[in-house]
Length: 356
Image (cartoon, rainbow, N blue to C red; front, side):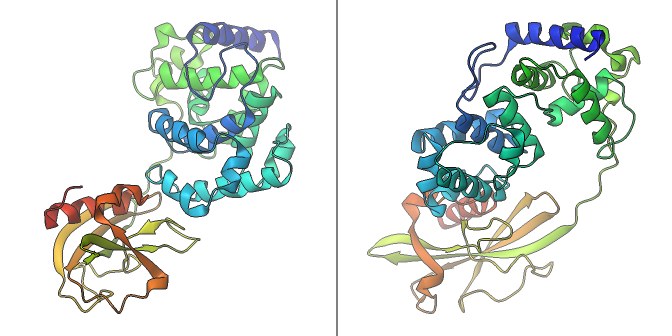
């Protein structure tokens, strides 16, 4: 680093020593690094998700599976159910694949960025973050917060995603050899608490004297983003099939295919999200079906409107037992339904007079 980069990193680390967020997967500034398992688990959970949303999931996962070997020994169904509601479910499948690979290698994570990249599901960002934070390796760690800080710091005009190459080069130039893990976390904290998307708190920023974005008078203009594309809209139909089993109310749940959207999760049966706009189409039973209304959900690449049809009765012998299971209504919250189907379940229970 040159003298100006050294001054910048020193100012940031001094700020971090005083203002670091207290997070359950971290060690305090300057302390020995945290368990690589906890760093890796938190970084996977934090992708596309907020810290506030992750805290409870992280606590539950580390309570149930305190080591990578314990997680590796868990069943797919257990882990997918525990992940329900956190979204982007391919992360949970990759989490298990990685845990099992690490366990097969003796339960110890590789301590280099290259070794971490060789594990299933670890991309460039996660490998760099674990290498820096857990193993104190110098690595270039760039998440959305870091992108925003650096784009403003250098007033980078190239729109995302194309501008990410230049952003990474700038991060590389200012990342110190020592305390690179603390530096990465300091950049994340600065973006999360000071250099925020809207109304950045420039007067509190330790990098303010170095920030070209601030001198433009429009720091919020950075990073420049390409215009958003309109997400296509899809329609689908889901089916709530309720009957009594041993005198208690149960609902028919299926297991979605291992690959694809919401792969491996318990769910309500549906039509593959290919219904006509009026929601018509055949159900898994002859019926009669009653409409319970619609639920909506926005996925990464499309939005979905799901018509919910309800069947109440015991004429369900045509349902193949190997494709699903009767789940007790009083334990529906334990089924691990992904957000979309949890919404549908709440709607169905409200329509049928049950408690959610």
